[in-house]
Length: 227
Image 1 (cartoon, helix red, strand yellow):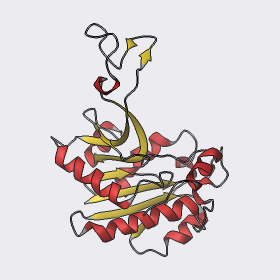
Image 2 (cartoon, one colour; image 1 turned 135 degrees about the vertical axis):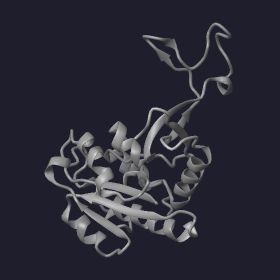
Image 3 (cartoon, one colour; image 1 turned 30 degrees about the vertical axis):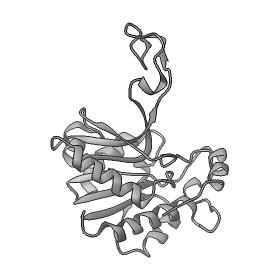
Image 4 (tube, one colour; image 1 turned 120 degrees about the vertical axis):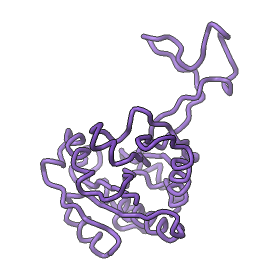
């Protein structure tokens, strides 16, 4: 079984009530969009995967909304797991509240990561994984010249060619917040959401878009939200 874990906490500093701020026809904004995407994931799954959905929250309105769905398990998130620096504590408790052999950690702040994207991500993971403790994360590929003050050029080998074509640069990735998957043993043994042998799974264009600021909300209004 795959446990899909969705943390939703209050106390957003940049945007007040970010997770439930209304967006167009969605009165509960990012939360409503994400749960509808996950509901559609159930519908298109066709019994390929067995899911458990766990929403961990300290927000009353989120708990009230989630109670409408019998397929959602609510974790009443205590204050000790809701602070700005409580991520590691939350990681430690996730395997205790999730029953699945694998845990897929996702966020409501990735409204463009659709039900189809989740299916594609899962299919890629189980196709590529080489051993039980392997893990993966959704990512955006970079095809740019990247320089480090410490290591110099990391996007290409200057000893081979000083200025390669952009398409010939190394495969580099930026982790986005859409999906992180690992075996439960990774949480228990490594106290982490990703194992040391993790690998990136490239997201579709814009799918990894993360809403974090007012400007992001403004950009979102110009983008088509799909379920």
